[in-house]
Length: 122
Image 1: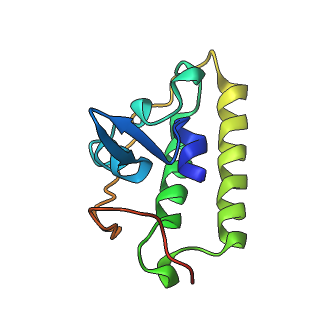
Image 2: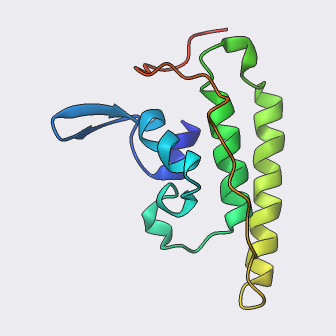
């Protein structure tokens, strides 16, 4: 659900006569460092890069194929609170100096089946 909130896309969308799970859609974008095309376009780029990356990282840990590798809801909540703090900081600083360069993060170390059908229960 977190990826759906970040991207503004449904869990599964139809693209060129194929059903595409949001994880399979977002993974290559994140691996290439393209956070702007991951975040819901309705925000029109008005978001903090750092908070967007943190939210994306949190969301990707939630879809790990191995249930024990996924974070607890307490950890997800703590991470999202950190995202909120980062976003509020971005809002406060808006109009000032830019965010600077953000290093790309690799999501290739997160194991997701190529035919992702959703995480299994713990």
